[in-house]
Image 1: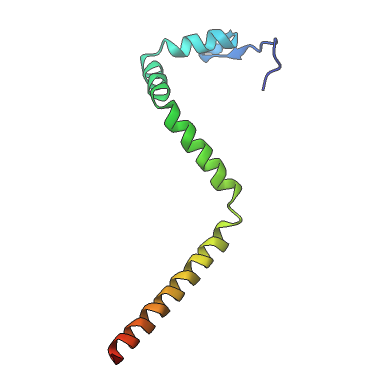
Image 2: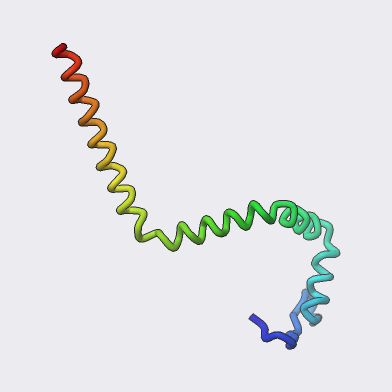
Length: 92
């Protein structure tokens, strides 16, 4: 990341160099890049939500196997309760 107030020249195709702002302007003059930027801006809220969710998911990645194992155990317990209820129902 650049320090505030400093600029760094960028290398462009053909060996030319430009300041970062000039490089951005050059890229935005490309219709495909401009269209992609519009799409990103149109979906900024969704993208932000996805990034926050993904960050949370990766922060809890160590907990996911334990949670999955607990879910399997709960499902096994539910299956056992269903079998017991069926057995009781058949006796009546």
